[in-house]
Structure formats: C-alpha cells, structure tokens
Length: 171
Image (cartoon, rainbow, N blue to C red; front, side, top):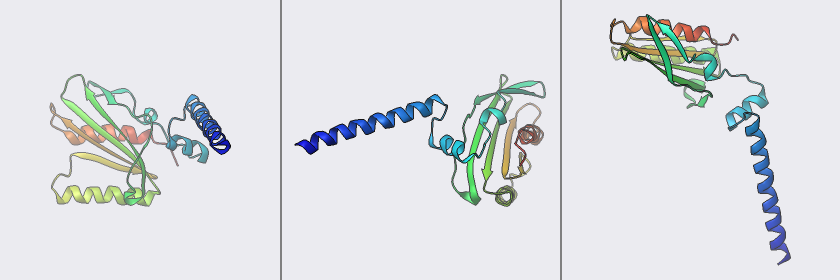
C-alpha cells in the first residue's frame, strides 16, 4: 500500500512539473515543438508575417491575406524539404486570387531540384506559363494567380512571387 501512495504523489508531481513547463513555454511564445527546437538550435526561420504582408496592392487591387501563417509547417521530406508556409490572397473584387507558398530545403541544390522538377512537370502536362517559381538560397517560392480581368496570370504571379522572394532572408 505504501508504494501505491508514493506512486500517486510522484505522478501528480510529474504532471504538475510538465504543466508548469508548458505554461512557461507558452508565456514566452513557444507554442509548439517546431518553435522550441528552432529557438534552441538558433536557426532563425522567418515567420509568415515577415514573408507575407497582410495586404499589398497589385494593378489597383488591394490584396489581403485570408490565411496568414505565423509559423512554418512541417512538410514531407520530398527533395529535402524541411518546412513550408502558405498564404492565400484575395482582393475585395473577386477578379484576382493568388496562392503563394514558400518552402525551405536542406540546401540550395535541393530547392533548385524541386523547382526544376515542378517546371518539367508543368511543361509535360501543358500547364506551364501560368505560375511563378524561383529559388533564393535554400528557399523556393511558388506563386499562382487567377486573374479574371486582365487574363494575364503569369504577370500577376511573377509580380507577387518576386515581392515575396525579395523578402526572404539572405543566407
């Protein structure tokens, strides 16, 4: 009987310690495992708010991010991809819809391979020329736009994609 009561006390104490640690981490803005490991390893990854402005203008439209990522999501280890963030922009006028994705890879060669493979797939499936993709160091940017008014999706995609690319940190 004595062992059972000690076990209960130890379990209660352990739960209390875990809850306290989680509370402290949350207080300091560390809400998940990726944020904790990023802060511990010192690898500063940009937040979604740094890369994706809440709103900006393009061809007279004000685009507003309808889903604004604040953290990086893990992605499959495809070509060494480590994490990605996505934002969807819509204008008040539904004539322009833009999806932007940024992925970080293990190195610049892996990012380049991914973008080249994506371009080859687009060409082989006859869907090339509509989106924008580029590499900056170990980051890749992909932007796709549906522009119902000017019917020029590449211009919209490349303009917006270049803006996001210019916000990426230098390596």
